[in-house]
Length: 615
Image (cartoon, rainbow, N blue to C red):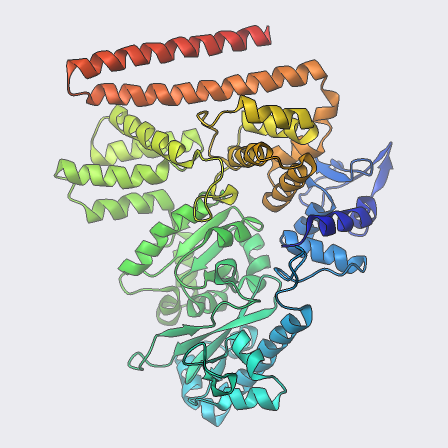
């Protein structure tokens, strides 16, 4: 973590007009500056920079933020990356990720981390030299058998780790790297953690080596592939997590695929390194792969900076299909729409390239199937639709996924498709979806999620305006509203599970625990910068708040609270209706009928209050 004081210092030292003006020409317009937006094509300037608010906002595409947000967007880096670029620009010393800045002292110095980067770069060069020498003859034969060209071998820096327990270790010592350096980097390992460093041995032996880069193009790890299926040990051996490598944050090939992703308008997600290389060889320069088959939340948010569309191209075997299914909980919360490349039995992108050619692979990717169509086909193939239990199993799995889609039109379309495929009344499908949606909303309605629970990045922002967005704006600009929300939004109110809804929950929880208002504002700004939500940016950085009267702000505040209350009551009403349908006794029916009537009365009171407020 980087301390808030350091973030503030960077923002204070970096004049937004000067920073933005170094990228695009600005023209003064009254107290502000205008330009053609660098983030979308336009002929009439709608991009505004305000020196008074130290913020930018584009009325055309909705992007906005502070000086850090601008650098993040235009350089294609994350929040920490934006801070580092600005710090370098103004000569501010900033620690590496996790290396201090929080008053607890450094975990690993910048020099040590630079040394780890250097070790990976040099070792990759040595591995590449081995591949082209006599010692790497079998490895090169394997590569040629895969049909990989010299160009991609150089582009992806493939190499070979010799079949030895100490050749890497001896090479490192000759290059001036210590045992501790190589152990920290993960290229050496020991039998147990208490063993002396001098007893370390090579982690990678007789393997085709794939260097792993981070988003900025710095080499941080390796993945070693066995050259033959009958070899002992795992098919792949990967670097352990280190001070410079967290596998959940890394997408293999992203540093090479960024431009391809923008050009193609989508990212192709493969299962492994060979498949990524095969796609690039075939001209699909938008291909990347997670480290392992799991596609994580962080990786999804990483891709969101470049595209809103992904194509999942995992193997057609059971493991590949399960990996596609698991990816749902990552790409939907990040706001990504997905398609699936439907491969034949035993097919993968690498095999298609070798056996059918580049054009066949490109055609497969272009003909990718909508994720929900793939999901429904898969579930139908796994269950017996001649039995009620089989139909129920298909419906449950499919609707659990559909419930996570925030667009109501899309949800309705998927429900109609499901009803048609299962040959059941649409009303039953919609009723089941309401129950699943209610259960999911109750599960996510927590003030402070545990580390393994869904976080702010695990939700989908709605396209329409949310009351949570208005309340966030009011709390951001006025401390009194932030304090009032603690009292006026009790835990039983169901806040939407969108990014903005969870962000509001976080703000209220922090305010309830006595968090300073300035710290709350910093938190909201950082989220806005990281997630680039047009609705939130507009409310934080365009002059909408300043133009509204105090009466109008108070009216908006009360109306939003009533709207959230109405949403909560509507969910309760639907739940009671479902319980009534399933009730087994007349006593239960009578009790539920009374409770439904009570909820209806409360809803009438809320609607009357809203009407009075607006009149």
